[in-house]
Image (cartoon, rainbow, N blue to C red; front, side, top):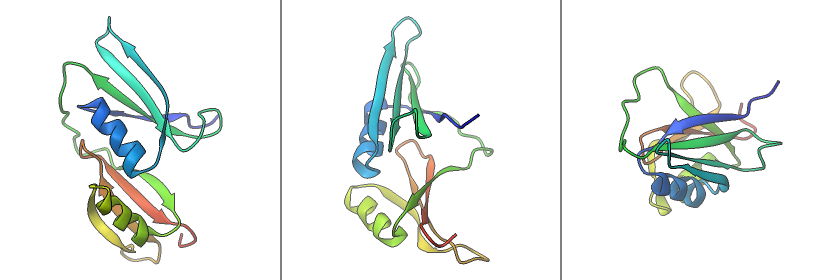
Length: 129
């Protein structure tokens, strides 16, 4: 067994694709519209699905936003330098919601950013965990 993907419901697919490709440097791996079901799927990630876990962005055409509730946490991405990654996100117009630094009660260097739909993405600095 292996993890395949995490699905996120998004209100505007093109806006989300821009965020994940331009701010986080992922690639669109595949995209499909389902007119009869009135939804579209886009899979984004850092490598092909046969070798990597990816994100599935699901856009239901008649829904602009979602109530995320309080159970979902975040997606985590390993970065070489969390401080530099935060600066790059800001320069790309992204939103940093927790600046890079050691996590509470530990030494792992983390940061949090937010995608256009309000989903949190954690940066974890390589070599600190």
